[in-house]
Each structure stands twice: as structure tokens, then as C-alpha cells.
Image 1 (cartoon, rainbow, N blue to C red):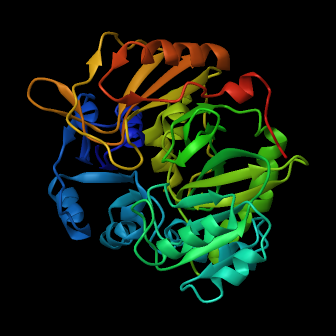
Image 2 (tube, rainbow, N blue to C red; image 1 turned 120 degrees about the horizontal axis):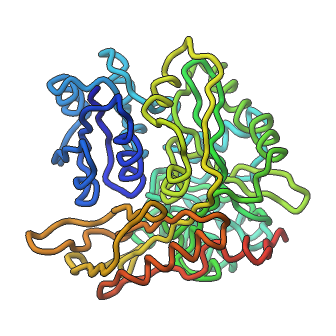
Length: 430
């Protein structure tokens, strides 16, 4: 069977790598992919620059594609699933209306409010009218979010009211840190620890939880610096045990699927709840993503011990009975290597030096790389994700950083404290 995967990051590399292991898969077309993805077995990279939805559909028809897997959020929000479903080609991901959960923070927050899903109190602004008065009435710190997609960089936690007003005004006009918005959401700052809960919502509404994970959004050690798309992750996390998983499914995921159904919207695909867990053990939703997280996907898929291709196909079959997932007992840690200057301006085309080799417990997933004819060079903000397994969390972290130590380029940056709080049992809930 032929598979088409959309995307070019570390998440898509992990999806491709895992799907390629299926005996049922003959060819994988990745659009546009990256240099690392091109080295995986069964893979053909396709330059899809300037492709529209109809171009992806035409490519799939011409190449006898029977399953499409969408990695990033933008094609989902732009309605690519609707196009393929209308034609009759199986595609894994939520349709355009469902993807509004990620495509619009305002839609998502209003949906939470209407369906009694726990989240932070908020207010939406599409102009500066009433903005200063609202900010002056708030207890600091507060959170500003842009309504639209922003590659994980549209959230700002602000300590001072003057700074908050400045950022909010800039976002609504000329932009801030390269990001602009027609609407912003200002919400309460929730105290606790963040965790990532991801699941598959099947065509017949089965909710299939994936293993737990924890992301590291901030650029610098100690959770300092700018927000990024993610600088590292690990799986599993003790923050989400069996009891917490049930609480999240019962109080957040199921009400979401049911609430959308009441609106006439069917959700199918990955669903990722970014959670804040308070000191009483209550989960609140910070945001929804309608796809796997990056870099959480790298850690999660390293631990997956069953056929991902079959799993996705079963989830698209309305007649599938209870779907089960098998996980390795190993722990996984992912460390992201980025370009100096990320998430703002950074240089490209810098030669990457790698003196090591991968093994069964370690895998390099490429995000922003190209081959210049002689060398592998940088081509993005996040460049590589180093993912390693271990018998426990500490071993997976040691293995990941050992592999990181064999790689370098001029301007390579990474966090040195991935999973440190969990290992040292220093979670801060207040």
C-alpha cells in the first residue's frame, strides 16, 4: 500500500520512520520532507512548494495513495481533510471545522466555556478598546495568546502591566517578535505543572490514549527565555498516571468529542491537550492541538511497540472494535538541537558535524536540514531531535545527551535540563 505524509519536521520524520516499519506499506511519499526523512526506507521526497489542496489530491490520485497522514496543523486548518474525504481517499486527521480547536484560540476558549471544560478565565480583544482597563484590573502575571496559528510561538507570559499593554498593542498592529494577530486572548495565569496528553479519536468515537509525555517550551534552561515550538520532551511522565488519565478523558476529551458532535462536527485524528495540573491534581486545558506535538511525537513513537500504519487504519474504520496500543516499557528522552537566534532570526546553511552513529536505542530525527551536495547543513530554527531509550528516565536522558555530545555546528544551541525536574522530583505546583 502507498502512503502519503505531509510535513517537513521532526514529527513527520518520526511518523515516516515508524510507518515505514510496517510490512503492509510499499511506498511512502513525503511532501515536502527533509534530508533526514529522505534517508528512510521506502521513502520518496516530493517538492511540494506552492502546492494547494487540489495539488496534493492530484498527486495522491496519480500515485495510487491509499492513506494520507497529515503532520502539521496548517493543512488541517486549511481543510485538506475535507478535500480527500470528499474524493474518497482515506486521510488521518480532523476536518476543517474540527481543526478550529487549534486554528482559533477564541473558538477554542469559547468552546471550553460552553461545554464546561476546565480552562483559565479569559477575554478576547480585536482592538485596543478597553484593553488598558482590562489589564489594569488583572492580577499579574497574565497570559497573552494570539488567536491565529503561530507555530507554537504565539503565547506570552507577562509579569508587568506596562509590558503587557505594549505587547498586546503591538500584536494587534505592527506585530511583536514577528507575530501579528487580528485578535488576542488575555487569560489568567494558571499555577501548576504542564504535561501533554495525546490521544487518537477514532472514526467511531473511540478515544485511544497515547502514552504520556512532557514538553519543554521555553528556549533556555530553567524554563527561561522565549517560547518555542519545543526544545525537548520525555515519555512517560508521572504527572499523568492512570488516575489522571481517566480524569482527563472524562472531564476534557470526552466532553470535547461530544460537544463537537452536538455542533454537527465529527472529530477524527490525533488530539493533543496541553494541560496545566494544579497542586490539588486538577487538570486544566491550556490549549488544544489537532496533531501530535513536536518533539513529544519523537519520544512517543520511539516507545510505540506496534504497527502504526495498522493502528491509523483501524482508527479510520467505523467497525473497529476496542483498539489497543502496545508500548515498550522503556523510557524515552528527546533533546532538540536548534540554531542560534531561534525562535527569532537565525543563520542557515551551516555545516553539521556528526562523529557518532545511531543504534537500537538512539535515533536522530531531522527537522531543518538539507544536503548541499557535499554536507548536511542547517535549514531551520529547530534542526535535529535526538531521541534515546533507556530502562528508566535517567538512562534515557544520559543516552540522549551522550549522542548530543557527538554532534556540533557553529551556533548549535540546546537545553541541558530536559527531564531534570522529574528526575529530581522538583515539580512546582504553586
